[in-house]
Image (cartoon, rainbow, N blue to C red; front, side, top):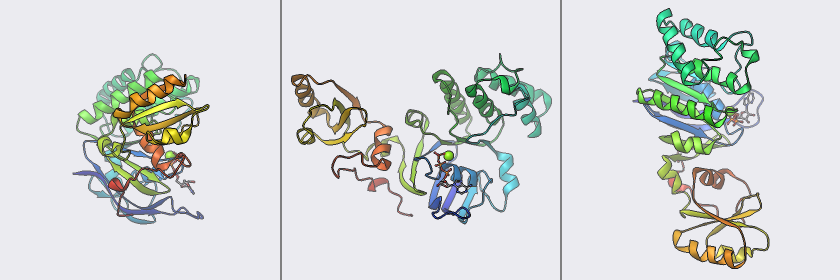
Length: 318
Ligand SMILES: Nc1ncnc2c1ncn2[C@@H]1O[C@H](COP(=O)(O)OP(=O)(O)OP(=O)(O)O)[C@@H](O)[C@H]1O
Ligand SMILES: [Mg+2]
């Protein structure tokens, strides 16, 4: 069963020169955590809003939990829950008011609404602030109210559009734990995030979109293969001979005073001997989703035309 099936979705906003989504086809498996990644303006929120029945596609078909987004809107709305990007709680209402009233609006009886409100406020560490008006809470706490409202519901599919934006590291982990609980109950999640560690840790499947098109998709293992090497070495940029480094692997400028060599374990000793001899600081670490993302959508990152070939996971439908 698919939580979302999107077929050649095209969205051109009124007056816009370019399509926000350009024939995007995506399958979101039920019971899984699916993550959409992409640079600012890539089309993530547009896709989420279409699936959440807040926006109509210009062309294409989207079915959510088996229902058509254009023809069966009210059926879908009962089964989904959304944390919108840049949502804001109401100033005068407390965390308790937001969650408890929302559950009642969704048809929960008072007893269940109370129990569920308490549970989610506890999980997100909002219980001590449950009676404080939102206007007197911090930015992160306001964001957690929105997450609590969406995650307290009995919806089958949760849309989280950058849910952990502005949250401290401890609060982010609380949200991650709530997301995992949701999945463990057999329910589905469509997440967008700019935090690559978050995507790497939580996602069963990832799609990367760029300029409204799907450019890569797969699970972490599949996406990881887009960069053929398995190790990266960051080395102080100063007087390093770039041509020399290129003999070890692909080289990019990190923009933070270091050059990054994508290479294999077998070459690491040679590079570290070189760095030690030249008295240069260096760091060896595994390749992450962050590297894959930047290699696919970053501009001018490669010092030569060494951009890895993503054809293995390119979506041919586009
Ligand atoms: N209401 C709108 N009217 C016209 N154009 C819009 C509208 N909303 C978004 N766009 C445009 O559509 C494109 C995709 O925007 P979208 O908000 O979907 O991107 P995003 O991937 O969510 O970006 P971000 O990471 O910054 O949230 C952008 O070019 C944006 O300017
Ligand atoms: Mg967005």
